[in-house]
Length: 95
Image 1: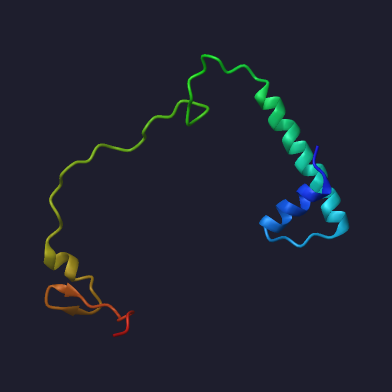
Image 2: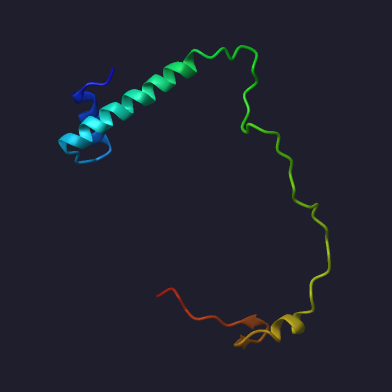
């Protein structure tokens, strides 16, 4: 199914430098992949709805609830370095 030119073309597209043994192995592997795709094409999928998951999925996240924030002074007590009501952090961007 796959000839040497096809393997060389795929290798060039993938920017792979293949030796003789690797080219031979790649030819066999690509041939098996194409055989598998042909087998999938033969499967009757008439009436089967497209799905994004093979098994049903449910959302496991909780509902959002509005809760009061902690007091500012309590949070700022954890700041190793502060400037008024703000956390001071090391500068990471240059001018």
